[in-house]
Length: 226
Image (cartoon, rainbow, N blue to C red; front, side, top):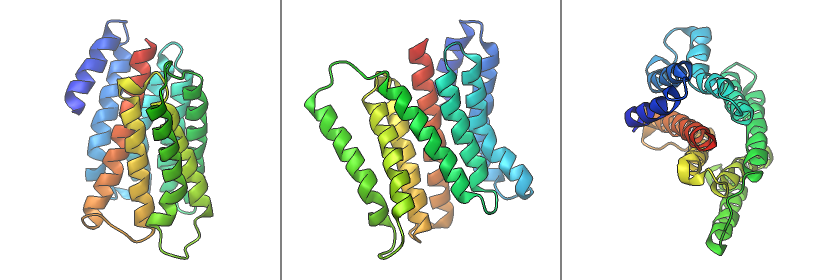
């Protein structure tokens, strides 16, 4: 999936004289797929660089494209969150960075709503918001404090809802936002002690669903805006 997508996106930007953007996309994809193989092998500092690089490269690529400051801000917030989550004592600061990114994304997508929305679109949107409200209660142990998680989950699903109702949804962005929701659901499950297929498999599912989600969001917005 990543190979053909990288080729298509790269061809698109090279036509506009943006070979530098193509290089950044290639760096992002390579780093995104290699990171789990390097995680924890070379100390904290190297791990933070390796984890932050994939989405940071997308943020820089967006910043180099005309009219993509919103997308650059969304990706930059994600890259900051990636790094801060792994800094000892800054987990909630990292979650806050992602929350800020979701707010930026909601404002961006809602300003570009898709015309001709029908009742099924609105029902799906309400269902996704409902999932955001209920998900922490479903995956965390009974009695665990879920207030902050519920606030974050609603922002996450609000971002995905806004993406699905935007004009970017047919161009990968909606799927990318849903993958982001899946990734964070798995992450919150791990916080509650539930794993899918063991710790190693669960960790891979969290990372790859997250990174592919960010890549699809970038691709959908950047190509549609051009």
